[in-house]
Image (cartoon, rainbow over all chains, first blue to last red):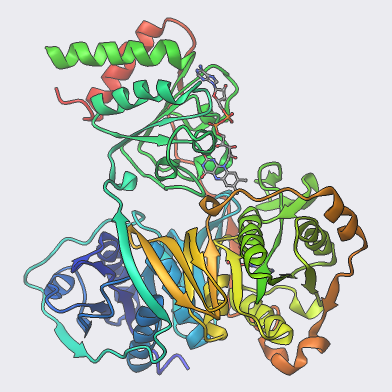
Length: 329
Length: 266
Ligand SMILES: Cc1cc2nc3c(=O)[nH]c(=O)nc-3n(C[C@H](O)[C@H](O)[C@H](O)COP(=O)(O)OP(=O)(O)OC[C@H]3O[C@@H](n4cnc5c(N)ncnc54)[C@H](O)[C@@H]3O)c2cc1C
Ligand SMILES: Nc1ncnc2c1ncn2[C@@H]1O[C@H](COP(=O)(O)O)[C@@H](O)[C@H]1O
């Protein structure tokens, strides 16, 4: 069975003709795996015409299969995306298929896996090749308390991979490769009567270098202003624990954690957050973690580089004042 | 209309203890509950049901104890509960789970809408819903955070996907997965609690589903993905410096940290 399947196929997610950065991360990781296996790296680019597909070659693909359609790929239509991806996979027969664990990726990958009657590992954070040339898919489980090493005994071996786990591959303009155009198929049964974009995310908190987060120690929504002020002075964005979101003090977009956003900033600043496992799941990979909490036994201190046992209502204003002084000089 | 809600029984993840040596959760350390996202799925079904006079069936696959979750769902307003339970179902991964649940759905038959949670807090793949939709050859909409309009033929919802908020209208039959934002689940009512205690929970095993299921698709054997190893993640080394008083000194130190880490330009 393995003979028939060869190479690594990466789903090159795009929106408005811009390729998602997770694709460049998958290309750098995919190249490493491909080198070990001695196979090629291919991209499946499903989108409207006019996308710069060469960029994918420069960043590590040996070939790009460009399924061009101006109509069906302008919207997150799971049927259109998954049927075309299935069609492509059946033709190329890659041994490994990697999809970024973005919201779209997470919605179409299971459809594709089910259609191909193969396995699918969700939300991987690391990938390796074992001695038999099989893909080891590593994913956190149980609120990130463990890492499970998973293998699949069906082809293709499919996984969704989290954004920001790997370095982006750098473009090398001397790289060459083929861009193969591939016919699109329109889902026969157009059961989606319409899809319309209402609004889009303005700032993606997961792209911020600095996140200043607030927890249930904040007394009312008015007081969050000081957190915004601190975040502003540090050129960062504001995050929150679920407790604050559920109090209605701030919108869900700001939630950090297991059921919110995962962030990996240079600095994560936790203000009055206890550090529940579900919160830590979303921020533990920050380069530097600072925590302020009145309770010296709060679990957040176990993972903080710098901790202050104290009241945010006292310390945050002091910090703001000092930062403003520095800015003035 | 007939609406099927997929509910999974999970350990109470906020209380469950974790054995970091062995890499397993101590299931006895906490009770079980309905997967929190599935309560939102149930609430969505109940709201649709009230307006369209629909039958709400909860379907769960799991151990005998999952009957408790089904009773809980009935206490919250579901009309009927079915548990898929068989030794042969043990060790199922996403694919085997989806195939088995689909067999249950086919046996129920004549459904218009299937509602699942966006993910389970223990399995945590968020894949079962969309796999089921594919196997049943119906469309699905993931991450539904608002129910805009519905009738017996179609559903219009708001979905948070592709770095945006999208309004989607789909013809039924279809499957949706819902987020926590869609609603606040109601609590069990006293009257329904009494009903739930007496309610009959239908249990189907492999023999009942044989018509829709091959034995090779089941459980561990029917699962293409296998856990080879469990590793306890290394926690990153952290400096772990603490200040308990003299906040002004602490603040000075933080400013130095900001400068060092190039967060403040100097
Ligand atoms: C399935 C599931 C998913 C979840 N997903 C998430 C998620 O994505 N994100 C998330 O955050 N949580 C999530 N949770 C909830 C999580 O378990 C915790 O309940 C939550 O993180 C607690 O938030 P908190 O730390 O702000 O509140 P608390 O735990 O109440 O902690 C508040 C802290 O503030 C301190 N404090 C109080 N006043 C002050 C003051 N003036 N100055 C300084 N310190 C002060 C207290 O000592 C305390 O440590 C999830 C739970 C479950 C079961
Ligand atoms: N064993 C199960 N029984 C019933 N529903 C399930 C089961 N496993 C998963 N589901 C449904 O699928 C959703 C996603 O689960 P998961 O893919 O495990 O994250 C859950 O919120 C449930 O609605």
